[in-house]
Length: 358
Image (tube, rainbow, N blue to C red; front, side, top):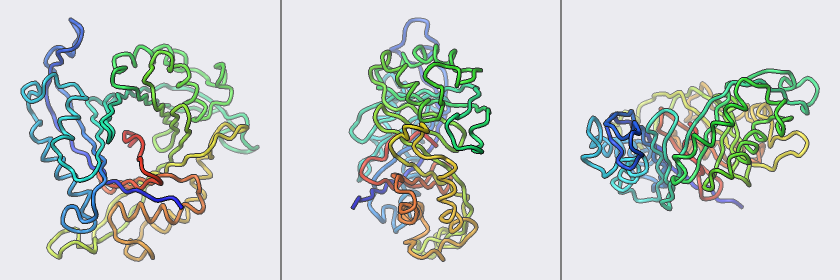
C-alpha cells in the first residue's frame, strides 16, 4: 500500500531591478536592469492552515504575496547581496516561515530560473524551443502519430546551480541539430517519441553538464516527458469548468458561497519504457482511460461527487488520484490548479518532483 503526500502550491510576481556583481566584466547583467519575477512555492502544510480546512493554498498565496511585496518595484541590491536567482529564492523561502517542508522556484525571465528543494539543493533551469517534423514509425496501423507531422517542441533543462552559466553553450549545438529538421533523420532518433527525445538530449548534454538532472520535452503545451537518467515520466493536462463551495469556510467568507473555477488538471505517470514502441504510455490512451473521471468533474457542482472531502484543490487532487489510479496504475502525481499559480499536488510517495512545468 502506497501512501500519498499532499502539497499546497502558490505563486506571486514582482517587478524589480538588480545588478549582478559576480559576472564577467562587460556582461550585461552587471549593469542595472529589471525583470518581471515570479516565485512559486510548494509546501506541506497542515490541514486547516489559514483558518479552516480548504484554506491552505489561499493562505500560502497570501503569505507569499506579502513576502515578495518587500521586493516589488525595488532595487534588489539594497535588500539582498548580489541578488542572483538563487540568492533571491533563498531570501524568499527563509522569510515565509512555513510550518512544513517547502521548495521554491523563482523565474527571473520567461526562459530561465532556479528551483530549490526542501533540502536546500539548488538547480538552475533554462527553456528552449525548436520547430521540427517527426513521425512515429512503430505505432499501430492507423495511429495518427504514424503520419509525418510537426511540433513546436520545447525543452527544459535542469542542472546544478553551479552549471547555470554553461547550459546555453552546451545546448547551442543541439539546437542547431534539431531545429527545422525531420527528427527521424537524426542518428539515434529514428523513433522520436518524447521519451526517446528526452533521453537523447540528456545523453548528449551529460558530459558538459556534470550536475545535469531532469530533461523535460514539451511535445505540445499540454503533454510531454521528463527523463532524469533513470526514470521516465510523462504528463497530460486537461481543463475542466466546475462549481464549488468550500464547506469549512465561515459564512462571511466568499469561498462559502457557490462559485466556480476553470481548473487545470495535470496527470503524471511513471512507467518503464516500452522497448518496441519507445514510449511509456500513449498520450491518447491516457486521455481515453481518464475520460470517465474527467466527465464526472467537468461542468458539474463538485459537492455532488461521492467521496470528495471538500471542493479545495487538495481534496480534488486526492479524489482524482483515488478514482484514476485503478485504471492508470502508472499514475504517480496529480496537480490541480484552481486559479493561475494556486492549487495543490498529491503525489504517491514523498517527493513531488520538479515544480516548473506549469
